[in-house]
Structure formats: structure tokens, C-alpha cells
Image (cartoon, rainbow, N blue to C red; front, top):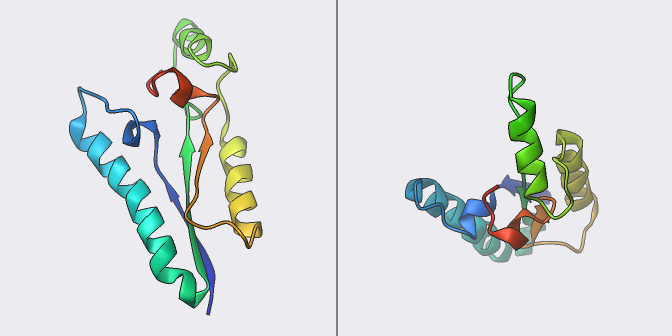
Length: 116
């Protein structure tokens, strides 16, 4: 047996979004499910981790000024891309000593309140 599970959450699981409480609760639950599952499945050699992306998927018709504003709100001053998230997932798949972890790939979004 053995395997890897990677859950995808977002920063609302750590910093509540007042206008979307159901979303925040579900993402917080997914982060906890990741950790509980990591403990429960470790004897079966199944590792469970969670990736928390920041702003990476933007609509094709997104206004450039809105994108600039989002980027300016991040410590790294730019929006990520799907390859950033894929690289994080590959790291978690390849690293046999990582389980129960929450990996933030968010440009520092969580450091400034989690909702850019």
C-alpha cells in the first residue's frame, strides 16, 4: 500500500471571509481533515498534505487595473500562476518525509490578512 493525497484549500480557512462564512468553514475543515487523515493513514503509508494557493487563476477578461491592485496587495507584488501550484504539489508527492503539512503558495497573502 501507500500513496499521496494532496488537498487544495485557500487562505479563507485561516482568515475568515465575513461575507462568505460557509466558504471559510469548509476550507478550515479541509485543512483539519488533512491533518487528521495524515495521522490516520500514516500506518498505511499514505501521506496527506494540503496546498493553499494565493491568487493564481484570473479570468481571461480581468481588467488590468484590478490585477495590478491584487498584485500590489501581495508582499511579492505579483500574481502567481498555475505552475507555481503544480510545483508545490510535485514537491509534496516526491518528499517521503512530509505529511500533515499545509504548504502556502500564496505570495505572502496570508501575512497580510489572506484576502487580496
